[in-house]
Image (cartoon, rainbow, N blue to C red; front, side, top):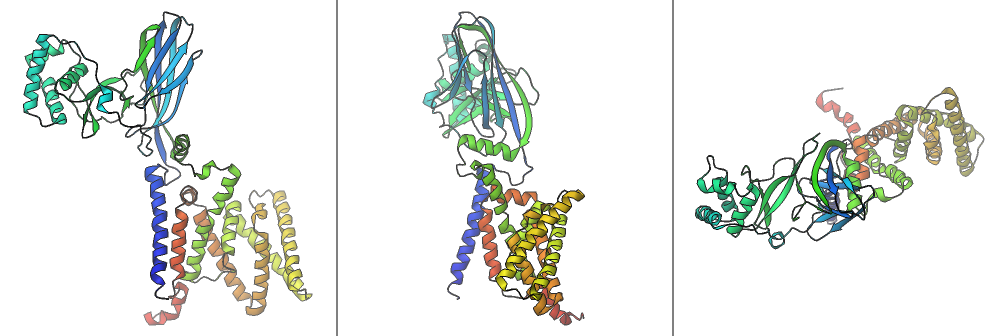
Length: 507
């Protein structure tokens, strides 16, 4: 016995740890919330493209955003009446393309995307290598080149790598008042091109990226320019205007690695503006939709038909009721009529609600006991007696359902949700118990069953418990491990402690 205990404890521990691991993975990796009321911030972004067609045939191409740290792509739509639409994917980025053979005059195209403000679901493309982000060369005359060389030499002396070099360059470029060389360069380059020029001269891999500041209710917002520097096998963001390092809060990097954001062939005066709206959505619904779109939850219960989902939702609650009954019988010492009859009653109470369910149970069992006493007096054999009791229970169920419907009760008429066979056996068991141990024991076990069923119902009907049981299958092995542990308990039950009350001086 003692040699098998370590194996038993190992099994219990493995069940508990395995269940917790599944719950933590599903919550922290996939983003499934632990409470049903959890909300999720979702940014609704509309990209508005406007241009004038001049040649008849038009091809418009827009670089598209992707999942990144802090933001997860959810849904996207391309709206373009009369245009052909396609999404072109490459190893480094995606582009939306609108095409039409003949069109004249002002045109408007729309790209709509929903982005969740979190970082739970990872569906990132392979990181762009520095070789794939070469910047186009800029024309630099001798005077400008001399000014650049002087600043590069000054920054190199004070730096020890790509990031420190970039910081020194930005410190020089954003100094106030600016140096003479910086003032000269500012007249020839914008801040982004100027910073990239310095980084290129210093032999540092960098790229021009665009960012969208997410602010609720903004209209006609435009992209802002940033520079990313490649160091330590990842990209670091810098603001060339202020010199700030790191990504600001609520900044979405739009299509990193794309050489251009918007290209229009056959049109002119093209503009790209953004409208932004922040909304809260139910986190569970949002995450499940996204997981399904990304194919990251192939064994999800939500892929089953609704009829099967409804069946499983009730089935997953039964272990919770079983845990309550084991606790009440093994640790508390409450006597019940049968082992798991209270669990089935709790399941029925979920359909009928607690008070109507209790009334239904008392009426059916009370009337059934009266009928059963008559069947006992006429000396029926066991099998006919049980069969007759089943038919009587069915008849009582139909009768009470019709009466409650006529009286206008909304929930009491759900008598049909009670397990009829179990009810019949309960009536038979209580009748035998009445004959052998008297009505007091029947009352104790009946009240114990109703009390345990009510407690189990309270837990099973709790929204958080129902949410966890259906969305986190790891809860099932955790419940099994707890039941196994309680099954090894051989100490005193709480109700037995009254036998030792004299030790405390209480009578």
